[in-house]
Length: 189
Image (cartoon, rainbow, N blue to C red; front, side, top):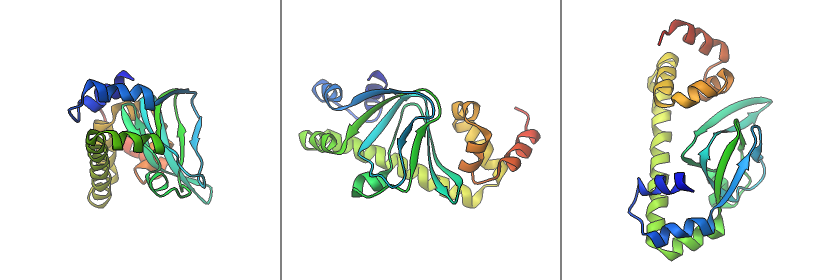
């Protein structure tokens, strides 16, 4: 819970009474590596905060995994469209490492939102941060070379660069593992 509290306090002003609600509405879970959190075709019922560990989100396109999300600790994640619209998710989410998660259901999130406008501010702040990341990622795909995308990934995500397989990183960056291997051989850190 401490990681989530620190995360929230770094983004908005919040009262102790509002923070106390976290323990009431967020459920703690510990997961082993390679634990499936969501399967494509199922409806997402939770928003997760990753207290520790690494999670990947992907789609399976004719047997090929397309990594869309690599989530490092101290971040929120969910299949957003599925969660918001109560619709089947196109995404799979699974832990890559042993992980500690805090999750909140949609009904409990609505209770918090109705309790205080602070929670709406937090949700808006987090949503805007994630939207900006998505927009930047699209821009990077349009303007950066594969090597530049990899160097930026390593600089901004050193924990992921060290602890995620080359296959997952390559897919996330929109390249084949062989291409990423060649890029890595060219670079000296």
